[in-house]
Length: 430
Image 1: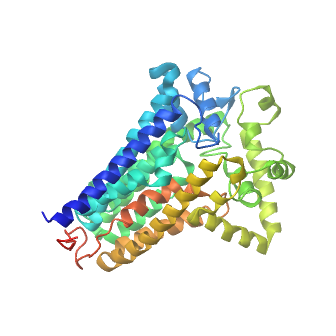
Image 2 (image 1 turned 180 degrees about the vertical axis):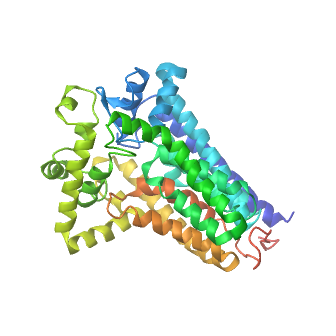
Image 3 (image 1 turned 90 degrees about the vertical axis):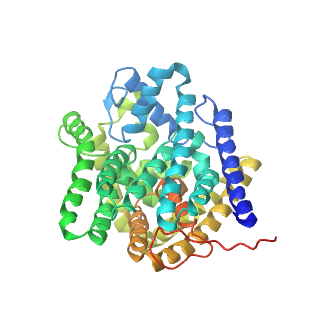
């Protein structure tokens, strides 16, 4: 092995170790608390309340009122951890998220090796472990760590669709689980269908399409049947859509201040904080289907009245989503060192985004169908959020692991078949 290449590999080994140490440090610092010093509270209390209700045998509900406002998988995981680990279940969940982060890095590396060749493996593994946004969510009681793992698992099977029959089955299984963890992954089967149409011969195509359609539906069926029963046929998948549409125009960056909260109440008659509570005040609200209908009506009115201002809001939201511009808003509520960490994370992300653009260009030369699939995925993920709140947190699990895969391209790629080994010419002398 050349000395230069050895030093190059050693750099990524050191980088991976630093990322792993940082993730362990975040878990240790956060411990068994609901929040840690680097974050606000966010949606964590809502998940914990649902988990507490499940743990107490009250079902997926707030104050006994059935809910479909949040996806069920993460609260079920929290409740299960509570049963197994007792009062230390939040620490246990963070340890599981640490392991999920390592698994995300490993599967991303395997995916990168398939796309770019074996030299990309160590590089991508290190990128994922140190990537600021992926690292940050290790200690959060939120869905991002597990959602990132599912996203990259989906693409692990997707890039192998033309090589293995199990690719379609894998995409179907991952899509079904992802839809129970985060509602906004509902478009995964569409991307899987495109990949199948673009890469498989007609003889294999229909069986694969059946897999990516039927398997996710099988996973979702118990949740949908439960909703139809407890909501008397008024809800199938989620009651979150209406409020998300209202927030998409009144609270586009997904971080409402008091003035925005009051405007949402004036327009829709309620806010999430009033719905997701475990006290008698929740009983003052009607059922979730009724609240969702009120919010849908308000959202339709608000978006129709917005006119061209709505287009401006969408453009701003694309900036929040793709450039993390939302991270520059509301910083006054954080300490100086937290602001510094957030800004540094944005700068690193910008550099990664630029490198990923070079990666997608390189990929288009050696495997145009896969490059187009990535572009379609990014486009659908963006367009499906345009009417809803858009921010860094929503982007992270859907996009950031794939950026690590794309930015792992060889410095000097040999033109030819995807997945072939490429050589990196590094001078012997420094």
